[in-house]
Amino acid sequence: MKVYLDTSVLAAYYCPEALSAKAEQVILRSKLPAISLLVEVELCSAVARKVRERALSDTDATRIVTQFHLHIDEGCYERLPIEATHFEVARDWICQFNAPLRTLDALHLAVCFSSNAVLLTADGALAKTAERFGVRTHFLT
Image (cartoon, rainbow, N blue to C red; front, side, top):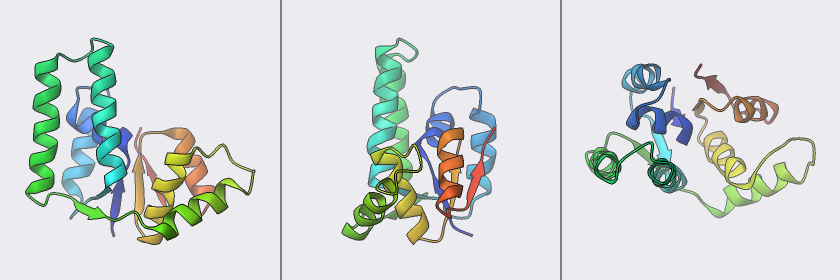
């Protein structure tokens, strides 16, 4: 079973957070967890936010991002492409007007859905929305 890691889980894995131990356990049990370029950008954004909020030092943030990129280079993650069809699916889901689905979350869900992966997330609202659109989900609490 392919697992798509949401940014909320990766941030907990790489940054000290309440869910860090659970995120590590689930990620390390996954055969080859999947991410997308969108997850990569969002993780850097999350780390930058923690620096701005003074929850992380510049040194720690650099170490985290370097470790993440090293894991990517070592093949620890399967990189799923984001293609035009994912944008179309995301658009169509948003245009149903029946779920609080944000643009980037819709793209994550479309990539996950098209890859027949299980979404691993610590975002309760995203987990609920994912299930509405038929995306299998594992909510990390």
